[in-house]
Length: 453
Image (cartoon, rainbow, N blue to C red; front, side):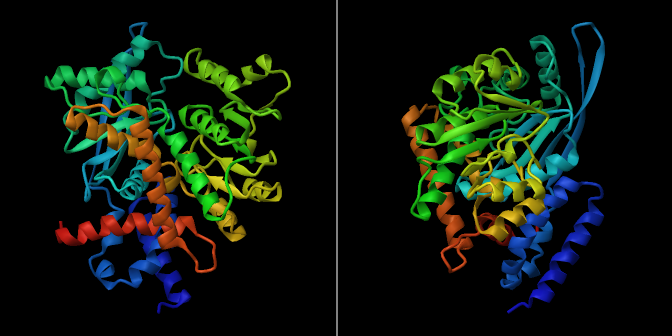
């Protein structure tokens, strides 16, 4: 049995080496640290993993492709952005993970996302490896033609590195149906092949039903499974949600359908608090506002004056039973976590990727609330992306009920895996440990089987 002192030394030694090899990549350090805290005891108890340096190998990407994207804006100015594709680990299947277009995108963020994606994809049970990519291009304020020219230029390079059996990108922040469509059209023209090399495509050309809703729906399904495991449910619960994109709005929709009352949504300008709840009609207004008008969430209070808008704030001070952080990484810090606990939050289910800072996660675990980490709770999106790949390979399309049924089954299986590896023996489940270890085992066993490659 490993002592707590020697375990801490192993973790500190591992992290020191990783930080030295990857300087200034704070998001990547954070993602690895969270996994290593869970997995290191398991690795030390299984000498075959330690001898083969599986954890060291698993935290090194297979490769990182960096390239320039040159394009022309509507005024005829030549613009240049940087883009990446991080192909992290393909031990259990082709690389799979989204493309993100946002000014904050850098190598550290994409490595954290690709690393997380490896575990997330493993948890789904589908044959998908982990990858991530994107660019520091900002689609906000750009015309459709500018976005088209950028996407086409990006695909001129990216098409060399992807394929249905190699790497299958999807969407992420800043990359929706419009961007996927432009990139897929350019790939098809460059390669003269119609094949499923991107997911999140339009239904007219190989997309899957429920893909848009999948991350938000899956997050709520996972939350409900956590509650059901304790003999409870979402019905009658009050919820606070951050974000107002696909993940947030579809989490709001599904939570409402299951009998919960959603009190908040947000964007980078602040959050709205509606004490009457954001019902189906109000949510339809938000979707039109964000997807069609590309407006700001502050406009909600003009339509529904009983609501309040809190500028430049996040919703974590609003008392509620359940929190769904669905905006972006590191949107909950330790102080906000303590406020949430003080205000009665009993469940936190992560819809965004790594939305809780490390110290915030420790507060949730210390309080022994139900905490669903992103790699488990928001795996619904990539799960349906995997189902889209399957439909493309088979040249068929499943019905909405079929896809949603498969999504529910996958989220149920992920929950069961987390319980298997995260049960503390006293009726509480550490879902962080459960998700990390369950995701690790499948990839690690595949890497062991391959030998030293």
